[in-house]
Image: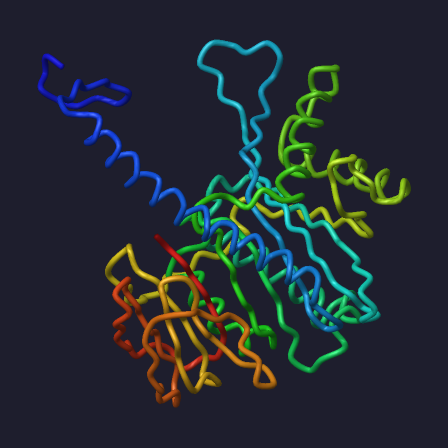
Amino acid sequence: MEDGKVHKKQQIPQAGTLDDLWKEFVEHSKKYIHHHELAKWQRQAHNMCLATFGKGELLVETDFIEKYKHEAGAVLTCATAPSTTMMVALVHHSPDDDGRHETDAWVFVSSDPNHDFDFHIYAMDIILRYYITGDGRADTAGTPVPTVHIFTDGCAKQYKGKRNFYAVAKSLHRLGVVLIHNFAVTSHFKSADDGIGGLLKALSRETEERGQRIRNTQAAADFLQVYAEAKEDGGGHFSSWSPYRIKRFHIKLLGHREIPRPFVDLTGISGSSKLYQFMGAEVQEVESSGVGVEVQTENGIPLVGGERGCSEPAEMAGGRINRSDASGCHEAIQATRSPGVVLLLEV
């Protein structure tokens, strides 16, 4: 370009031979195959978790939906419209431990524009308290310490942050549960919660186009509540693409300043191209690799395992964070003294 800068979508001619082009193609293919392998591994872990979890366990799929703007059909000059932040979570449980799943849908709507860690943590606390000590406690009555598997995408703003890691590590003390947070590494988890959220947003927009004005977040919550009750009466089927039949719907309206955002002074971990593991006090030995890590054992069975890397006993009087780079070497960093497991694969 004339200004000397490289702009997006700019085609820059490069001189070389076909051999150079082939080598570059091979390098790109290696990166793609590596990312694709990790994505497939994550999807397999998700499917196996759905197929094997039993009584007293919960599996949560959650994601934020794009903001819904309450724009009128005719907009005046310089007019501003309020917006609604939506978060959808699907909670799977097997109360009879016979392989039969039941699924509840939770929809959080708020005028708070910040869809961040604190929003996610606050909503998760509401959901988990409902199943631990609230009206849904019969679904986790099969074990004194329920295990909750959370599957989300890898967005840094909502999930891959110190505040979320701190909340997960403190979950046993705060909520009486063990959280295992699984992140999509190379792509977003496109599951039924994304489809349900998109459907609710599209229905709201279509309703406004037909003349029924949804002016604010309160009106959006009322509209979704009526729609959810109609779906419950119809057996919980959303559409042919949804693999789940929703047993119960929970529409929660959160106030503009209801979500607490306390200041938490946490020391971060430098680096971005490494594999992190956040463990609780029960773990006695760590085995890390470039693909998976052994993070916890239950009745002698590792929950997640890797094939290569280095192994080292860890003194677990308090929690520790082990960091493993691609070469297999790792160093231990002293962390919090709270049990809990967070597994983050980042490439």
